[in-house]
Image 1 (cartoon, rainbow, N blue to C red):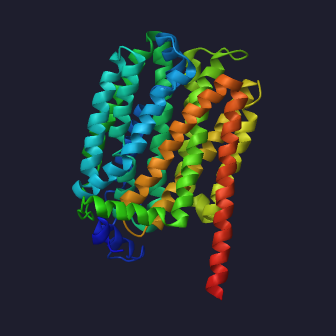
Image 2 (cartoon, one colour):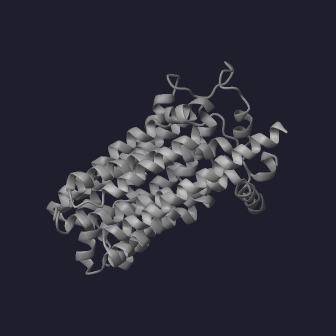
Image 3 (tube, helix red, strand yellow):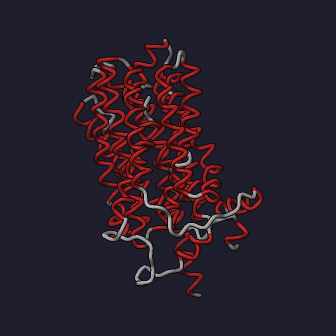
Length: 425
Protein backbone atom coordinates (compact mmCIF):
# COMPACT_ATOMS: atom_id res chain seq x y z
CA UNK A 1 0.00 0.00 0.00
CA UNK A 2 1.44 3.36 -0.99
CA UNK A 3 2.01 6.24 1.41
CA UNK A 4 -0.58 8.28 -0.39
CA UNK A 5 -3.20 5.63 0.11
CA UNK A 6 -2.53 5.31 3.82
CA UNK A 7 -2.25 8.91 4.81
CA UNK A 8 1.33 8.35 5.94
CA UNK A 9 4.14 10.80 5.39
CA UNK A 10 5.85 10.11 2.09
CA UNK A 11 9.09 11.47 3.47
CA UNK A 12 9.35 8.60 5.94
CA UNK A 13 9.11 5.98 3.25
CA UNK A 14 11.45 7.77 0.91
CA UNK A 15 13.94 8.36 3.67
CA UNK A 16 13.79 4.75 4.78
CA UNK A 17 15.20 3.65 1.39
CA UNK A 18 18.35 5.74 1.72
CA UNK A 19 21.30 3.67 2.94
CA UNK A 20 22.77 4.88 6.21
CA UNK A 21 26.21 5.14 4.59
CA UNK A 22 25.01 7.35 1.71
CA UNK A 23 26.79 10.72 1.96
CA UNK A 24 23.78 12.38 0.32
CA UNK A 25 21.60 11.39 3.29
CA UNK A 26 20.86 14.69 5.04
CA UNK A 27 19.29 13.13 8.10
CA UNK A 28 20.91 13.66 11.48
CA UNK A 29 23.53 11.35 12.92
CA UNK A 30 25.43 11.35 16.24
CA UNK A 31 28.04 14.10 16.19
CA UNK A 32 26.40 15.80 13.22
CA UNK A 33 24.71 19.22 13.05
CA UNK A 34 21.59 19.55 15.16
CA UNK A 35 21.78 16.06 16.68
CA UNK A 36 22.62 17.21 20.20
CA UNK A 37 19.93 19.91 20.19
CA UNK A 38 17.39 17.43 18.91
CA UNK A 39 18.38 14.78 21.46
CA UNK A 40 18.25 17.21 24.38
CA UNK A 41 14.93 18.68 23.25
CA UNK A 42 13.27 15.27 22.99
CA UNK A 43 14.92 14.24 26.25
CA UNK A 44 13.24 17.23 27.93
CA UNK A 45 9.91 16.35 26.33
CA UNK A 46 10.26 12.87 27.78
CA UNK A 47 11.05 14.34 31.19
CA UNK A 48 7.95 16.54 31.09
CA UNK A 49 5.72 13.73 29.79
CA UNK A 50 6.56 11.19 32.48
CA UNK A 51 6.81 13.75 35.29
CA UNK A 52 3.25 14.89 34.54
CA UNK A 53 1.82 11.51 33.60
CA UNK A 54 2.86 9.81 36.83
CA UNK A 55 2.92 12.85 39.11
CA UNK A 56 0.32 11.36 41.49
CA UNK A 57 1.83 7.87 41.70
CA UNK A 58 4.24 8.48 44.58
CA UNK A 59 1.54 10.51 46.37
CA UNK A 60 -1.21 7.89 46.35
CA UNK A 61 -1.07 7.15 50.10
CA UNK A 62 -1.42 10.89 50.84
CA UNK A 63 -4.23 11.29 48.29
CA UNK A 64 -6.00 8.31 49.89
CA UNK A 65 -5.75 9.99 53.29
CA UNK A 66 -6.70 13.42 51.94
CA UNK A 67 -9.90 12.25 50.29
CA UNK A 68 -10.58 9.30 52.60
CA UNK A 69 -10.51 6.69 49.82
CA UNK A 70 -8.91 3.27 49.28
CA UNK A 71 -5.75 2.47 47.33
CA UNK A 72 -7.76 1.14 44.38
CA UNK A 73 -9.83 4.37 44.26
CA UNK A 74 -6.76 6.60 44.44
CA UNK A 75 -5.04 4.54 41.72
CA UNK A 76 -7.56 5.98 39.23
CA UNK A 77 -5.57 9.24 39.29
CA UNK A 78 -2.85 7.26 37.52
CA UNK A 79 -5.09 5.02 35.42
CA UNK A 80 -7.12 8.00 34.11
CA UNK A 81 -3.99 9.74 32.82
CA UNK A 82 -2.52 6.67 31.14
CA UNK A 83 -5.94 5.64 29.85
CA UNK A 84 -6.51 9.07 28.32
CA UNK A 85 -3.16 8.82 26.59
CA UNK A 86 -3.94 5.32 25.31
CA UNK A 87 -7.29 6.44 23.85
CA UNK A 88 -6.01 9.56 22.10
CA UNK A 89 -2.56 8.56 20.90
CA UNK A 90 -3.77 7.26 17.51
CA UNK A 91 -5.92 10.35 16.70
CA UNK A 92 -3.05 12.59 17.80
CA UNK A 93 -0.63 10.69 15.58
CA UNK A 94 -3.00 11.34 12.64
CA UNK A 95 -2.92 15.06 13.44
CA UNK A 96 0.88 14.92 13.40
CA UNK A 97 0.74 13.43 9.89
CA UNK A 98 -1.24 16.46 8.74
CA UNK A 99 0.13 19.36 10.79
CA UNK A 100 3.66 18.18 11.57
CA UNK A 101 5.41 16.42 14.42
CA UNK A 102 6.86 19.50 16.07
CA UNK A 103 3.56 21.41 15.93
CA UNK A 104 1.57 18.60 17.55
CA UNK A 105 4.22 17.94 20.22
CA UNK A 106 4.34 21.63 21.12
CA UNK A 107 0.55 21.95 21.35
CA UNK A 108 0.30 18.76 23.40
CA UNK A 109 2.86 19.95 25.93
CA UNK A 110 1.19 23.37 26.16
CA UNK A 111 -2.20 21.89 27.04
CA UNK A 112 -0.73 19.30 29.41
CA UNK A 113 1.31 21.80 31.43
CA UNK A 114 -1.69 24.16 31.64
CA UNK A 115 -3.82 21.36 33.10
CA UNK A 116 -0.88 20.47 35.34
CA UNK A 117 -1.12 23.90 36.95
CA UNK A 118 -4.84 23.31 37.65
CA UNK A 119 -4.52 19.79 39.10
CA UNK A 120 -3.36 20.91 42.60
CA UNK A 121 -6.64 22.81 43.08
CA UNK A 122 -8.94 19.80 42.45
CA UNK A 123 -11.66 19.94 45.17
CA UNK A 124 -12.51 16.22 45.05
CA UNK A 125 -11.15 12.89 43.86
CA UNK A 126 -13.65 12.89 40.97
CA UNK A 127 -12.45 16.26 39.67
CA UNK A 128 -8.83 15.18 40.11
CA UNK A 129 -9.45 12.03 38.05
CA UNK A 130 -11.15 14.05 35.28
CA UNK A 131 -8.28 16.55 35.11
CA UNK A 132 -5.78 13.72 35.00
CA UNK A 133 -7.70 12.11 32.14
CA UNK A 134 -7.57 15.39 30.17
CA UNK A 135 -3.88 15.71 30.92
CA UNK A 136 -3.20 12.19 29.65
CA UNK A 137 -5.17 12.85 26.46
CA UNK A 138 -3.10 15.98 25.83
CA UNK A 139 0.17 14.13 26.40
CA UNK A 140 -0.88 11.61 23.73
CA UNK A 141 0.61 13.92 21.11
CA UNK A 142 4.15 13.34 22.39
CA UNK A 143 5.22 9.67 22.24
CA UNK A 144 4.14 8.60 18.74
CA UNK A 145 4.99 11.98 17.19
CA UNK A 146 8.44 11.93 18.76
CA UNK A 147 9.21 8.47 17.40
CA UNK A 148 7.92 9.44 13.94
CA UNK A 149 10.05 12.62 14.06
CA UNK A 150 13.11 10.52 14.87
CA UNK A 151 12.33 7.99 12.13
CA UNK A 152 12.18 10.85 9.60
CA UNK A 153 15.05 13.01 10.81
CA UNK A 154 17.65 10.48 12.08
CA UNK A 155 19.60 7.95 10.02
CA UNK A 156 18.43 4.34 10.49
CA UNK A 157 21.62 3.08 12.17
CA UNK A 158 21.29 5.75 14.85
CA UNK A 159 17.54 5.24 15.39
CA UNK A 160 17.69 2.76 18.29
CA UNK A 161 20.15 5.00 20.14
CA UNK A 162 18.06 8.13 19.49
CA UNK A 163 14.84 6.46 20.68
CA UNK A 164 16.76 5.09 23.65
CA UNK A 165 17.69 8.65 24.66
CA UNK A 166 14.04 9.69 24.39
CA UNK A 167 13.02 6.75 26.57
CA UNK A 168 15.82 7.73 28.96
CA UNK A 169 14.15 11.12 29.26
CA UNK A 170 10.98 9.28 30.24
CA UNK A 171 12.84 7.50 33.02
CA UNK A 172 14.40 10.74 34.30
CA UNK A 173 11.00 12.43 34.26
CA UNK A 174 9.40 9.55 36.10
CA UNK A 175 12.18 9.49 38.65
CA UNK A 176 12.47 13.23 39.27
CA UNK A 177 8.71 13.68 39.45
CA UNK A 178 8.37 11.03 42.12
CA UNK A 179 11.41 12.07 44.14
CA UNK A 180 10.49 15.76 44.12
CA UNK A 181 6.84 15.15 44.95
CA UNK A 182 7.83 12.82 47.79
CA UNK A 183 10.00 15.33 49.62
CA UNK A 184 7.82 18.37 48.86
CA UNK A 185 4.69 16.52 49.97
CA UNK A 186 6.33 15.50 53.22
CA UNK A 187 6.82 19.18 54.12
CA UNK A 188 3.90 20.97 52.41
CA UNK A 189 1.40 18.36 51.26
CA UNK A 190 0.54 16.65 48.00
CA UNK A 191 -1.14 19.67 46.41
CA UNK A 192 1.99 21.80 46.63
CA UNK A 193 4.01 18.86 45.32
CA UNK A 194 1.83 18.62 42.21
CA UNK A 195 2.14 22.38 41.70
CA UNK A 196 5.94 22.13 41.75
CA UNK A 197 5.84 19.41 39.08
CA UNK A 198 3.60 21.62 36.96
CA UNK A 199 6.09 24.49 37.09
CA UNK A 200 9.00 22.20 36.20
CA UNK A 201 7.04 20.84 33.24
CA UNK A 202 6.44 24.40 32.00
CA UNK A 203 10.21 24.98 31.93
CA UNK A 204 10.80 21.74 30.03
CA UNK A 205 8.09 22.61 27.49
CA UNK A 206 9.56 26.04 26.76
CA UNK A 207 13.10 24.65 26.39
CA UNK A 208 11.81 21.86 24.13
CA UNK A 209 10.20 24.31 21.71
CA UNK A 210 13.28 26.53 21.59
CA UNK A 211 15.74 23.66 21.03
CA UNK A 212 14.01 21.20 18.68
CA UNK A 213 15.26 21.69 15.11
CA UNK A 214 12.64 22.32 12.44
CA UNK A 215 11.81 19.10 10.55
CA UNK A 216 13.46 18.80 7.16
CA UNK A 217 11.99 15.53 5.88
CA UNK A 218 8.35 15.78 6.87
CA UNK A 219 5.70 15.81 4.16
CA UNK A 220 2.09 16.41 5.17
CA UNK A 221 -0.25 13.47 4.77
CA UNK A 222 -4.02 13.13 4.72
CA UNK A 223 -6.49 13.15 7.60
CA UNK A 224 -9.00 11.03 5.68
CA UNK A 225 -10.47 8.58 8.25
CA UNK A 226 -10.66 5.71 5.74
CA UNK A 227 -6.98 6.04 4.92
CA UNK A 228 -6.10 6.22 8.60
CA UNK A 229 -8.13 3.08 9.33
CA UNK A 230 -6.46 1.36 6.39
CA UNK A 231 -3.03 2.15 7.81
CA UNK A 232 -4.05 0.89 11.25
CA UNK A 233 -5.43 -2.33 9.73
CA UNK A 234 -2.18 -2.87 7.83
CA UNK A 235 -0.15 -2.60 11.02
CA UNK A 236 -2.47 -4.85 13.02
CA UNK A 237 -2.29 -7.45 10.22
CA UNK A 238 1.50 -7.65 10.61
CA UNK A 239 2.29 -10.56 12.99
CA UNK A 240 5.60 -9.04 14.13
CA UNK A 241 4.00 -5.71 14.97
CA UNK A 242 1.20 -7.48 16.86
CA UNK A 243 3.78 -9.29 18.95
CA UNK A 244 5.66 -6.08 19.67
CA UNK A 245 2.45 -4.32 20.71
CA UNK A 246 1.58 -7.14 23.11
CA UNK A 247 5.11 -7.17 24.55
CA UNK A 248 4.98 -3.42 25.21
CA UNK A 249 1.59 -3.75 26.93
CA UNK A 250 2.73 -6.63 29.13
CA UNK A 251 5.98 -4.96 30.17
CA UNK A 252 4.03 -1.85 31.14
CA UNK A 253 1.48 -3.90 33.06
CA UNK A 254 4.34 -4.99 35.30
CA UNK A 255 5.81 -1.54 35.67
CA UNK A 256 2.48 0.21 36.25
CA UNK A 257 1.40 -2.28 38.88
CA UNK A 258 4.68 -2.31 40.80
CA UNK A 259 5.17 1.44 41.00
CA UNK A 260 1.53 2.20 41.75
CA UNK A 261 1.51 -0.11 44.77
CA UNK A 262 5.08 0.11 46.09
CA UNK A 263 4.36 3.32 48.02
CA UNK A 264 1.60 1.62 49.99
CA UNK A 265 3.83 -1.34 50.79
CA UNK A 266 6.68 0.82 52.04
CA UNK A 267 4.42 2.87 54.30
CA UNK A 268 3.31 -0.31 56.08
CA UNK A 269 5.21 -2.56 58.51
CA UNK A 270 7.93 -3.78 58.52
CA UNK A 271 9.22 -0.77 56.59
CA UNK A 272 7.03 2.17 57.77
CA UNK A 273 9.01 4.69 55.70
CA UNK A 274 8.14 8.43 55.59
CA UNK A 275 6.86 9.98 52.34
CA UNK A 276 10.12 11.72 51.48
CA UNK A 277 12.13 8.52 51.73
CA UNK A 278 9.54 6.65 49.66
CA UNK A 279 9.86 9.32 46.97
CA UNK A 280 13.63 8.85 46.99
CA UNK A 281 13.14 5.15 46.25
CA UNK A 282 12.33 6.24 42.70
CA UNK A 283 15.97 7.19 42.19
CA UNK A 284 16.25 3.65 40.86
CA UNK A 285 14.80 5.13 37.66
CA UNK A 286 18.39 6.17 36.90
CA UNK A 287 19.03 2.51 36.19
CA UNK A 288 16.29 2.70 33.57
CA UNK A 289 18.00 5.71 32.01
CA UNK A 290 21.17 3.67 31.53
CA UNK A 291 19.46 0.48 30.32
CA UNK A 292 17.27 2.37 27.81
CA UNK A 293 20.16 4.39 26.37
CA UNK A 294 22.27 1.23 25.89
CA UNK A 295 19.49 -0.77 24.26
CA UNK A 296 21.08 -0.32 20.83
CA UNK A 297 24.30 -2.04 21.93
CA UNK A 298 22.27 -4.77 23.64
CA UNK A 299 20.43 -5.55 20.42
CA UNK A 300 23.74 -5.51 18.53
CA UNK A 301 25.13 -8.23 20.80
CA UNK A 302 22.09 -10.42 21.51
CA UNK A 303 19.66 -9.61 18.74
CA UNK A 304 16.16 -8.27 19.35
CA UNK A 305 14.71 -11.46 20.79
CA UNK A 306 17.76 -12.10 22.94
CA UNK A 307 17.47 -8.59 24.37
CA UNK A 308 13.78 -9.17 25.13
CA UNK A 309 14.55 -12.46 26.89
CA UNK A 310 17.17 -10.68 28.98
CA UNK A 311 14.79 -7.82 29.83
CA UNK A 312 12.01 -10.22 30.82
CA UNK A 313 14.30 -12.45 32.87
CA UNK A 314 15.83 -9.50 34.70
CA UNK A 315 12.38 -8.17 35.54
CA UNK A 316 11.21 -11.56 36.84
CA UNK A 317 14.22 -11.93 39.14
CA UNK A 318 13.56 -8.44 40.49
CA UNK A 319 9.93 -9.30 41.20
CA UNK A 320 10.92 -12.38 43.20
CA UNK A 321 13.49 -10.44 45.22
CA UNK A 322 10.91 -7.77 46.05
CA UNK A 323 8.90 -10.35 48.01
CA UNK A 324 11.48 -10.28 50.82
CA UNK A 325 10.83 -8.31 54.01
CA UNK A 326 14.35 -6.86 53.77
CA UNK A 327 14.56 -3.28 52.49
CA UNK A 328 17.92 -3.83 50.68
CA UNK A 329 16.48 -6.83 48.82
CA UNK A 330 13.33 -4.89 47.92
CA UNK A 331 15.49 -2.06 46.56
CA UNK A 332 17.62 -4.51 44.57
CA UNK A 333 14.42 -6.00 43.19
CA UNK A 334 13.20 -2.57 42.09
CA UNK A 335 16.54 -1.91 40.40
CA UNK A 336 16.26 -5.13 38.38
CA UNK A 337 12.59 -4.55 37.56
CA UNK A 338 13.38 -1.04 36.31
CA UNK A 339 16.42 -2.09 34.29
CA UNK A 340 14.59 -4.98 32.65
CA UNK A 341 11.50 -2.93 31.88
CA UNK A 342 13.25 0.03 30.27
CA UNK A 343 15.54 -2.20 28.21
CA UNK A 344 12.58 -4.24 26.95
CA UNK A 345 10.53 -1.12 26.20
CA UNK A 346 13.35 0.57 24.26
CA UNK A 347 13.98 -2.59 22.22
CA UNK A 348 10.31 -3.18 21.41
CA UNK A 349 9.47 0.45 20.58
CA UNK A 350 12.49 0.90 18.29
CA UNK A 351 11.65 -2.41 16.56
CA UNK A 352 8.19 -1.01 15.76
CA UNK A 353 9.73 2.02 14.04
CA UNK A 354 12.05 -0.23 12.03
CA UNK A 355 9.41 -2.81 11.11
CA UNK A 356 6.74 -0.42 9.81
CA UNK A 357 7.26 0.29 6.12
CA UNK A 358 4.66 3.07 5.97
CA UNK A 359 2.60 5.11 8.40
CA UNK A 360 5.26 4.99 11.10
CA UNK A 361 3.40 7.53 13.22
CA UNK A 362 0.38 5.22 13.33
CA UNK A 363 2.57 2.16 13.97
CA UNK A 364 4.20 3.93 16.92
CA UNK A 365 0.81 5.23 18.06
CA UNK A 366 -0.66 1.73 18.24
CA UNK A 367 2.36 0.64 20.26
CA UNK A 368 1.94 3.58 22.62
CA UNK A 369 -1.77 2.86 22.94
CA UNK A 370 -1.10 -0.76 23.87
CA UNK A 371 1.70 0.34 26.18
CA UNK A 372 -0.46 2.75 28.16
CA UNK A 373 -3.43 0.39 28.21
CA UNK A 374 -0.97 -1.95 29.93
CA UNK A 375 -0.09 0.83 32.37
CA UNK A 376 -3.74 1.49 33.20
CA UNK A 377 -4.45 -2.22 33.60
CA UNK A 378 -1.34 -2.72 35.72
CA UNK A 379 -2.07 0.17 38.07
CA UNK A 380 -5.71 -0.87 38.55
CA UNK A 381 -5.29 -4.66 38.72
CA UNK A 382 -2.10 -4.32 40.75
CA UNK A 383 -3.90 -2.17 43.32
CA UNK A 384 -6.83 -4.57 43.48
CA UNK A 385 -4.46 -7.52 43.94
CA UNK A 386 -2.65 -5.64 46.70
CA UNK A 387 -5.96 -4.95 48.43
CA UNK A 388 -6.92 -8.62 48.20
CA UNK A 389 -3.60 -10.41 48.83
CA UNK A 390 -0.96 -7.85 49.71
CA UNK A 391 2.30 -7.37 47.83
CA UNK A 392 2.47 -11.05 46.84
CA UNK A 393 -0.77 -10.56 44.88
CA UNK A 394 0.72 -7.66 42.92
CA UNK A 395 3.88 -9.66 42.21
CA UNK A 396 1.77 -12.61 41.04
CA UNK A 397 -0.01 -10.44 38.48
CA UNK A 398 3.35 -9.05 37.29
CA UNK A 399 4.92 -12.50 36.92
CA UNK A 400 1.99 -13.61 34.76
CA UNK A 401 2.61 -10.61 32.49
CA UNK A 402 6.33 -11.47 32.21
CA UNK A 403 5.41 -15.06 31.36
CA UNK A 404 3.35 -13.57 28.52
CA UNK A 405 6.37 -11.59 27.28
CA UNK A 406 8.52 -14.73 27.20
CA UNK A 407 5.81 -16.79 25.49
CA UNK A 408 5.29 -14.18 22.76
CA UNK A 409 9.04 -13.88 22.17
CA UNK A 410 9.29 -17.67 21.85
CA UNK A 411 6.49 -17.56 19.27
CA UNK A 412 8.47 -14.93 17.40
CA UNK A 413 11.56 -17.16 17.40
CA UNK A 414 9.52 -20.09 16.05
CA UNK A 415 7.98 -17.90 13.35
CA UNK A 416 11.43 -16.63 12.34
CA UNK A 417 12.79 -20.19 12.00
CA UNK A 418 9.82 -21.23 9.88
CA UNK A 419 10.35 -18.22 7.66
CA UNK A 420 14.01 -19.10 7.18
CA UNK A 421 13.15 -22.71 6.32
CA UNK A 422 10.41 -21.64 3.90
CA UNK A 423 12.73 -19.15 2.21
CA UNK A 424 15.47 -21.81 1.87
CA UNK A 425 13.03 -24.24 0.21
